[in-house]
Image (cartoon, rainbow, N blue to C red):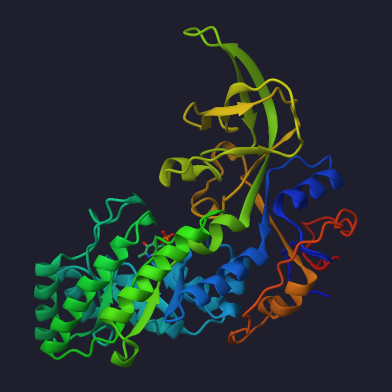
Length: 450
Ligand SMILES: *Cc1c(COP(=O)(O)O)cnc(C)c1O
């Protein structure tokens, strides 16, 4: 079977967990010490199902910038998600997969003119704005566009805030709607983003209420305000189910109050990290280590150097305020020391953490990092010529059989897959169920090996 070229997907007979998969891979390929991601494709499917279950009225448009891995994009396209693109390249990437342009929202309130031109050619007509100049630009380049007004939110509880850069306040929103009417542009709705890594559901509730008031004003001016976009910011790390469910509950309630079903407003969201964070587990190899005595406290400390760092996958430490936590593959008892873990480049900034507690580990051992799917590979570069982790996907056969169509070549148009329930029971007897796969690099290698 040549379903996917250049795409190392390992289909396993029984479900695997990421760490278990990594252990197996490391065991089978003891010589290969390059960093890699174990990507759990079932986890992505489960997230989608959970989304549909938790917020049946809200259609997700995956935020491509969060992780633009083609395999994930294909899978999400197949599952029926829409996409939030913010540039020409992101739009092109989604269109090239065969996704129709009406499944894309161009959700960048400040766009380069030539990109708007491109969106027009590509048929992506729905786009956000939050300032007068943008209206003028769109009037000139794409007067038939369907505009979505981005409003400001209270994102003081978010890890990554946007309100200082994007969003119109109430007064500006009214002014912009009047302006749009005056120059005969079509505004169809309102969007917001409560901040990435949003910690409270109240921010969503308040923003939905504000959106209602602004959309009512738009309707009064004669627009047909029929789209509400509640943005991203939904948590996606392992163990955040409860938090997500809480936000979803609050969103549903606010929607039912301000946008009851019969009002006919279509509701979408732009989740990024929600979909991908927990699916990616990164395995790094210890390439060097040192012991040192803390001059202040006389405490013995360890320093580990691993082969992916803040220029690569761990750019999330700098850009996404992420605090990664190391896990070990082996159960190592013995004394633990305060340890710092450094990336492989020659820059002193390249530090992943300074506060890990680790035992003494030999060079060649693996350090594993969970929840590494969001804002990691999408922002990584090969500084010093050192590559960052490459994804290696795994999925149990029972799930694969439901989604493999997503990866067929020359797919003209993605039809929406029908997945409502995933098989997620996890067997214990998996150890020897996976036959070694071979050279990942081979472009015509069958990607399915069970
Ligand atoms: C980054 C971004 C998102 C995704 O945010 P997450 O916190 O990853 O869900 C969604 N919409 C817009 C406009 C963004 O800029």
